[in-house]
Image (cartoon, rainbow, N blue to C red):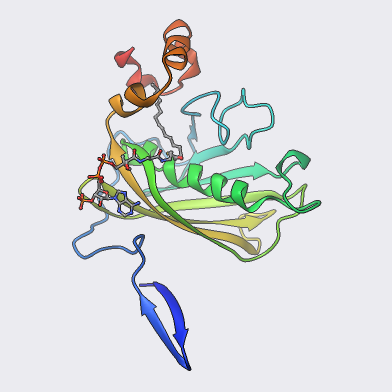
Length: 204
Ligand SMILES: CCCCCCCCCCCCCCCC(=O)SCCNC(=O)CCNC(=O)[C@H](O)C(C)(C)COP(=O)(O)OP(=O)(O)OC[C@H]1O[C@@H](n2cnc3c(N)ncnc32)[C@H](O)[C@@H]1OP(=O)(O)O
């Protein structure tokens, strides 16, 4: 199990990370009503910066269910995603992985929010790259879902540019209703198509 590490003199000291799978965590079976492998998973919110199609300069992540509790996704790095000249901003690469890992809730049939996300940046990602992401559930303990993923350059078998591990927490739909601005909830009430999670729309 990988952990954090630092050197004390010549000795490498390994410490557990909060995203490491804790004792007792288990990989649950794929729910019977999970979307079949190959299904395009809907954007949870059309204004989401990562997956929404109404976010002009967003990442426009396309996400597909995979076998087991896993998925794959793509996003094209555009000039709007630059940090250094011509290179993707690291925060946006984390964002893409955050979204991909969070979207595993489509497969576990739960609403997940990020509690902690750890990202390793292994290679620069130039503008024009199509980043191929994959994500999987590593284990579940109570409301905690441990997940990992990576992004590869230009093909599902390309060189790994970015890796992440995350701890996600299952929340009820009321989490979003309680914390959102009133005008955003009103906008959804007026146009339920802003949320593409049909099974959750009975709350409005
Ligand atoms: C109306 C519109 C509808 C919209 C429909 C959309 C639906 C689909 C949305 C999908 C969206 C995806 C988008 C991408 C993913 C984001 O980017 S989500 C946005 C970023 N994340 C957030 O905003 C979360 C902010 N944090 C919180 O709200 C609260 O801290 C949390 C995470 C809900 C936890 O609070 P809580 O419910 O009070 O639970 P709490 O007991 O504190 O924690 C539960 C467990 O997790 C552990 N834990 C929590 N945080 C951590 C941490 N950072 N490190 C370690 N352990 C932790 C706790 O220790 C606890 O463990 P146990 O006691 O069970 O052993």
